[in-house]
Picture 1 (cartoon, rainbow, N blue to C red):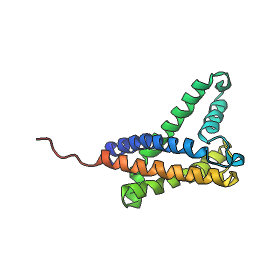
Picture 2 (cartoon, rainbow, N blue to C red):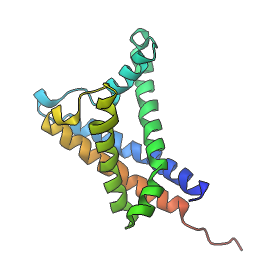
Picture 3 (cartoon, rainbow, N blue to C red):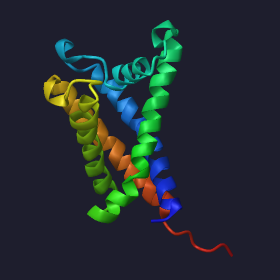
Length: 160
């Protein structure tokens, strides 16, 4: 795999985080009140910062939000960088492969390393509506990641 593929995947992952975040914020409003827990990127970011000894509680809310968004988009780009390797292994069209990859990223994160690191409880202990929301928005992220990565890594015709 070429460096261009990794960069295309990272750009796709970064770009995919935009509609994912918008859908997450919109759909969160429609969850039943008892299922409307904090969306995972915020507590995850705050726990990582706290574990690193950074005084995030002293920061004003706009700075906290900026840190959450920076970490969310950074994770989206990092995970997206690996999409071309997944697609090479899995094959298929970019958008469906991307949606599948998004579900894999969700599972490896919220059933895997995040609870293993004791940053959040596993998704098996989340309310069902929040699980459905997060699975759906990871599908959006992955599909967008696939589409953008494919468009950026496609061979360009020579210039006249």
